[in-house]
Length: 97
Image (cartoon, rainbow, N blue to C red; front, top):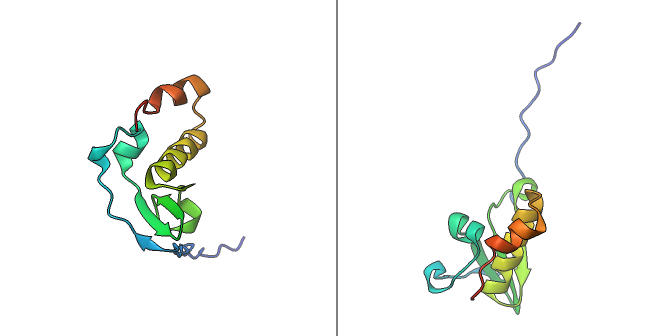
């Protein structure tokens, strides 16, 4: 048998549109995962993106018309990724934004 050394996969850096937004996470009551991981927020025109990683194949991103909406969408996608049940996902959401 012949064995070849596999080359490690190179990570694809994701190009995130817009500019990085300075966001005060302590100003709002936000979902649990948002507060735990504090994803970066970018603004491109009227759209906001919440992004945890700049590596395209490993990123989790949310989209919204405000930073808060993008963060809530990001939190929902994290919950989906972790396959949390709907009742548990609802209990992790903030009631006041």
